[in-house]
Image 1 (cartoon, one colour):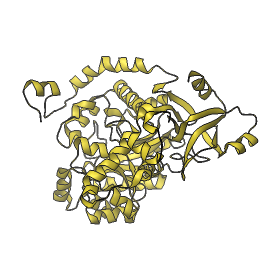
Image 2 (image 1 turned 90 degrees about the vertical axis):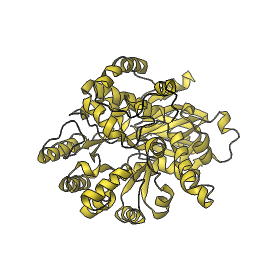
Image 3 (image 1 turned 30 degrees about the vertical axis):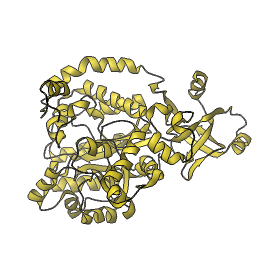
Length: 466
């Protein structure tokens, strides 16, 4: 295997001959892929590629699947230092834990947190992640630097709250000026894609919500916000504005194909129609619903209505395979069992919404998300010579139900090998882990975090098991 790693690490064109290639129309054997200048240059039969590229020496991978990298449509790269602090906590943990923690991070800790999270993303097969924006003061550049060093394709949000929820709130005119600068700086970046964000609709004035959504549309980027995730937030919106959050965004004219709404778990039939009619996209975050949410987004109904959606982690667990399983599993538990729906979308739906459908929701359908000529060479080499895939009868379902991140041998973004069997090939990840272990306790200690429950050991010592 070390010889294969060396071949995959070589500069210049790559000619790969895997056992299977997961194409948009399904898995195919007997194919070859040429990677050139960071993109898929040619995808054809092995015979045709050998004929047309005689100068390239092939890398034969008979036991591997070449598949698109996963796209995480919603995460928080600067929350990795908190992790299990939120386990078992009641809803709206962002108010008591994430806003205080992120707001207290200095530039170095933002960098460390983002680099750790980006590494976790790649280890889980995510070659692209949509970051909702850091609430720290003026440290977006540190987040970008970390993502770039790791090699994670990133859609990076710039938070435009003008009513709270971040470490520092400039005047509205300054916010919009900084938003324009953010778009300008990363407009043509090959790996970093700019985005605009508002944490939740109530963290911004109506004028700011409309202005940011319009700016995103005019610049061809994504506008992100969290909506309809928690009952209390829906009720606050009804009291303050007379409308539910999605209804209010529609009233302002702030929905549209440029908009990516995280969660959308508590949605009415009327709101589903608003999403469909405006072309608005949704990040379906099933593990977040399992760990700390009030409800499960009706993803199957969204699919039936033609609502665009992709799978997202919300920073919970970076494993694209287990995310797909959770996506399908929650639809079965929440909706399928009551109606006798035994498939809940089938394996192909969840693979699509973890790859090409997620890329579309993230505004990157012309950039990544599929094994197709002209797209960025963001892909995985998955070892199929495993008991879990033997015998193989239906690879789509097998990837959803049996797949796991430890089966990923190689992770590529932009045509470059980034990870081999879970570890970076060009930088020292274990040194990063040591640095994070050494400095996180002090960072957590100074953050004004409020936990409702004690940690697990204290629970056990007190005889509490809730």
